[in-house]
Image 1 (cartoon, rainbow, N blue to C red):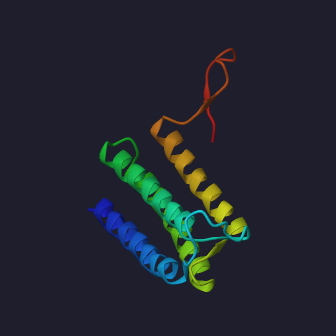
Image 2 (spheres, rainbow, N blue to C red):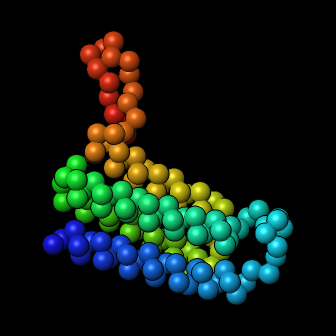
Image 3 (cartoon, rainbow, N blue to C red):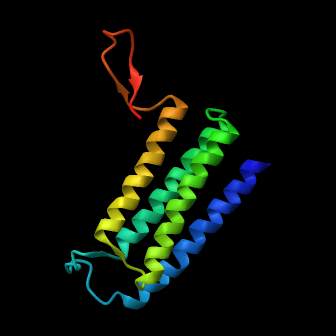
Length: 141
């Protein structure tokens, strides 16, 4: 039951992020697909890519929970971290007409990658360090 509520919350957050960003992109995008963007701001496809990354991590959490690879508590903790990243992206984009400055964009991607890596470690599919010569391999994370 709790997973369903988390799923609904994450889905709602994704929709709330996607709607204003898509509208801002459509309203403000007048350049051709091959035109060079301002290097300090990332708009349009890059913002959409961030949203898709958030949705991908969310789906990974849902799949791992449904397969009983993680506990409900772990799933909830990962969902909360993912939701905070989504909220930060929404706040940044809303304050700058749908744009996310490069530094903040890369920080959001880094934070999202950390959640994804934590999910991999928690499910046992994380990158392993060590060659076993000291008694085993250890999760990287």
